[in-house]
Amino acid sequence: MMEKNIPVLIPQEMLDVTDSEYRRRALEEGPHANQLWIAEDDDHVEFLMIAGIDDDDPRIVHVIPMSNDPGEQTADGLVIDKTPIGMPMVAWPALGIPIPVRVLDTPLGDFCAGVAQAVTCDDPALNGHVHRAEDPDDFLAAYAQVSERAHTFQQWWAIGRHLPPLHQEQVIVFGVSEERKTYAEALKTALGLSAAQRNAIMNHGMPLTATQSKKMKQAGFPAAPPQAQEAIPDAYLIAAEQPRWRRILDDMDIDGDDVRLELARKAAFDLAARTSGRDAAAVNGALLKAVESMKNGQ
Image (tube, rainbow, N blue to C red; front, side, top):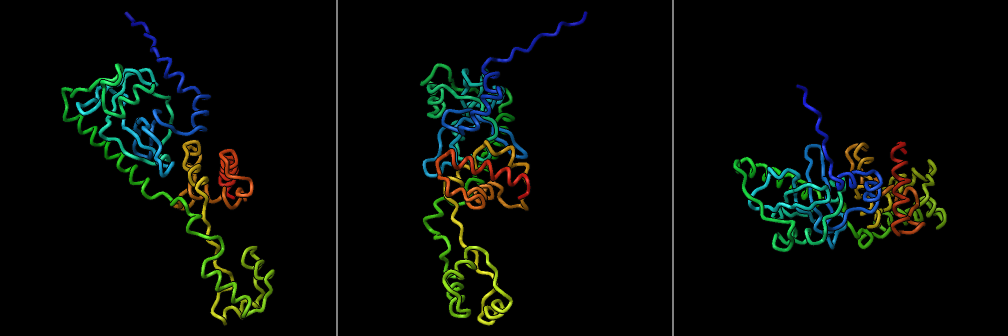
């Protein structure tokens, strides 16, 4: 006798957090504490709970690794009965680690505050929906899985240590490097150019004539001035790392350079975004224009 098809019941919580409108809104808002996410790179996919945003660098989130398979639990973890996806999960507070926002891929809703506190503190006594996990029958295989998971998060942690530095404007003054000072002075002494002419060459790309280039070469200088140092404002460096841009940026190839750094640079300079303000709306608007420009190869 043919068996009847048994319908698979999907928890309402899962339907809520996979809804396209929730996904759009959550990506625009960015990650925050107590939120469940999927993090992903080319080789690994992991669940995690965000314990908090780093105080010194908002591009870093402090996370606790998780699993949606209760069969992977080990005695050093916690089992959570009430989760944003409507099914039990396992968390390992002892593996908590800071990782870069750029590896976050999919938001999956928020844990209630009491559950999040119990997980963050590694104390199941703080909430009735959290209890201490147990070792499975095949505990060696389970701990091997936990070890592999910890290694993945450590790899992501290493990425976070090499992000472009923040606070660049505190150490770089636009257009005032010693090389540019010397070159500008040579335009005056070797070529006798006026201040307006020197400004046009130094800052607006006006080329030297063949005769001027020859004189500068004889004086020991190239035909083109040294580039001005660019200090990308923190607002652009931070916003470019957010998960809302990930799906687009991961498909781009810019000859091995950091695509998020290029996005921040293009938004801050190529599009003259600095003149329109640095509040969140202005920065994200500039990044959106920069993304479109990069997609079109401009």
